[in-house]
Structures are given as C-alpha cells and as structure tokens.
Image (cartoon, rainbow, N blue to C red):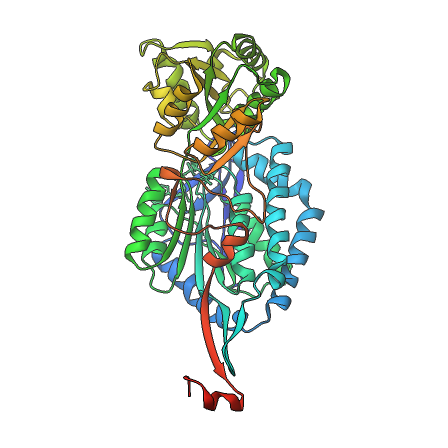
Length: 495
Ligand code: NAD
C-alpha cells in the first residue's frame, strides 16, 4: 500500500488510489489534499488530484470494456448487482465505519445511507422486467418496436455528504443499462468510492466498467469536455451544478445536475405537536444538517408557540458528538457559526446557540451544536442561504398564504413539508409548494424507487432523472426498429 506521513504525529496514512482498468493506482501529481476525520481533525489518508491525462486513460479503457459489456444480456448483467448487494449487506459494519471516519456521520447514519444505496442496487436488478420496450403491428405485416441501447461511457460527479449512497443512486442503474461508469467522488470524501470499486470488482464486474478518477475542478471540467463521455450525472451545490450543466451541455452531453437546497417546513396550528417536534428536530440535525433534504426554514403559521418552544428546548438539549456527528471541515463549522455571529447585527435573534452547546468527542473535531435563528423577515440571510449545518431558521407568518409566498420565492426547490392534521391543508400546500419533493408530516420526504429523486428550480439543472424508473430513460437511448416480414407487406404502403 502506498502511504504518506501525517504532519502532526508522523503516522503513516494510506494514499487514495484511482481505479482504472481494474487496477488501483495512485496518480502521479504534485497536487494533493489530506482526507481528515471530521471527528478528530486528523488526516486519515492523502489524495493526489488526478490530471486530465488520468481521466483519458480511464475513458479509453471504459470505451473498450463497454463494447463487450453492452453485448451481454441485461439478465446476465444484473447478476453482478445481486452479488454486489449481498457483499454490501455482509459488510455493512466496516463500510459504515469508513463513511463515519471520512464524513463524520454517526455509524447509525452511515449504515442508513448505505442501506438506502442498496435499495438503488435492488431497483437496478429489476431492469429485465422494466426495460421491456413496446412493439406494435403498425400496418398489416409491418411491426415497429422500441429497443433501449446504452449510451456508452457515462460519468457521475458526487458531493461529500453521502460518499457511498449518491454514487449508488447512479452507478448500478447506469451499469445495468449497459454503460461503463466513471465516478469522480468528492475530494473531501473519496473513500466510499474506493470501497465501491473494490466491491464491484469482487462482485465480478469486468474491468473498466466501473472506474474511479479522483480530483477536483480540473477533472470535473475534463469530464464535461471529454468527447467520449456521453452523459453526466452531477450532485452537489447549485453553483457547481449550474456550471457543470452549462459546460457539459455545450459539449453536447446529456446532463442532469442536482444542486443545493433550502427546504421549508410549514407548521400550522392544528399540527400534531409530538410528531411535529420529533420530526422537525430529526430533519434539521440528521447528518449534522448536511443533507440536501434537511429542514432549514420553519414557517410558523399563526400561534404555534408551544410547538416552537418544544422544538427549541429539544434542539438545545442535543449533544454534538453524541446525538449527531461533526460537520465536514473546520471551514464548514466556521461558516455555520458565522450565521449566529452576524444574526443580531442583522436584526435576528439566536434563541438556541450551537456555538455554546456542550459536546463530547475529540476537542479537535469539527463539532457545532444545533441552533435556532429567529429571523425578522424573509429576506434575512439565514432564511435565504443554504447554511448546510444543524441550524433552523424560524419565520413567523400570519397566514398559510404568507408562508407559501415565502416558500415559493426561494430560488431553490428541492423539498418542502407541511405539518398538519387536516387533509385539506395538506393538499393545499402539496399543490402550491414550489418544490420537486413535498412531505406531509415528513421532514425528509425522500422518494424511494421506483420514484425518482430530484427537485425543481435552482435545485436541478437539465432534463430527465438520475434515479427510479425515469432514470432508465436517462441512462439509455431508444432505437425504433420497423420490420416487414410477411407476404402481406406487398399490399400496403410500406412496400
Ligand atoms: P460541491 O458542489 O462543492 O461539490 C460537488 C462536486 O463538484 C465534487 O465532486 C467537487 O469536487 C466538484 N466541484 C467543487 N467545486 C467545483 C468547481 N468549482 N468546479 C467544478 N467542480 C467542482 O458540493 P459539496 O460541498 O461536496 O456538497 C454539498 C452540496 O451538495 C450542498 O449544496 C447540497 O445541497 C448538495 N447536494 C445536493 C443533493 C441533491 O440531490 N440535490 C444531494 C446531496 C448534496
């Protein structure tokens, strides 16, 4: 194993390899970053950032491998996925440990995210049943049928917050459809992708069908520009999603880029207090608030003070390091704390201050407690920005219409939720929320397969969906084949 020496205590840590053509190899590069355990701040690995030439080698191998892979019947291709699923289920504990160490999620959260990724593998194993194309005798003796073909080599670019789950949104389905898949993981959390490459190989996937090329913006741009990559799935912040969509589209690729979020939770006076409090607290603090589905702004309609008091008390009692993990980096922790620092000057009140939370764990870890910022108006930065930490911003509204106006005005549109015991209110909000995923009494309304995952507005760029049944359309192209066999063709217009 190639290793590097950690600066603080001269401990040897592994170098993170790329996986290209079935081989693990550390790219030669004078640009590298430390991968730190957010719970301790200590480096656990070193990552050399690949160059476009490394991507080029991966793509060439993938083009070659994909030609043979596409000739294998889908029923046989998915056998690899059955083995992958069994391997991952058998190794849930050690895999969760890897995600816990590189990302900071609790082990329970890491396991949950891997299980969710396994659901995507399960879905892809149903492809033989799902990709049956239509056929029709369009004229006497003339048949038309639609047949799906893989695109060729496709790529996935993924964020730090779900190092294994987000790659699994894309890779199993794309691969089962007959493509070769190149993963560019986040350079902050590259180890989940490395584990996936090892698992795919052990499951019997031919070399070159799943490759990992680590890197930063340089590799992302090289992916967007590469003439032999046919489609790009991106998941990350809105700024980068927009740029990736524009660049890859200009290179005539199929692109679906999922971006950032600012999710609104609308609470009305008839909401069930127990359910609402527990659910909102979990939505805000799960994975330390670093989820694109996390509840972020609570729109309090009318007098719901008893519910707000209970939410604040519950959040104030949570212990970072015990109830949820650290955030990804010291920069992220300082950015989150910055909203509390500036709140008073901006006319807001910090009624739960995560900077002062009692915490457990290594003092050098990137922990910050849950916060509540009560904003004076809907234009406040804590209402508008994606904070991406365990912070809940509260805005008081007199009416449901006012709450919906605020929700609708957000440039994002990933998720929204309403807490109510009224079917009428639930339907009213579901119909009017400007978000691609809506929850009724659910603060993290993640659609599960066969439904696709994805938001609206600045939370998504490009057409199609990466996951679920519509994901099959994204990762394939259709051929329309018209055939005339019978003698009867002599009598119709096609002859
Ligand atoms: P990010 O946008 O910084 O990084 C995502 C990927 O883009 C990484 O692989 C990174 O290497 C690359 N990248 C970063 N800067 C780049 C640049 N300037 N040019 C080209 N590539 C670049 O996102 P992140 O911080 O890793 O993840 C958190 C963000 O992802 C949040 O905004 C969150 O809401 C979003 N997210 C969205 C979804 C969704 O489904 N909509 C899911 C998970 C995370």
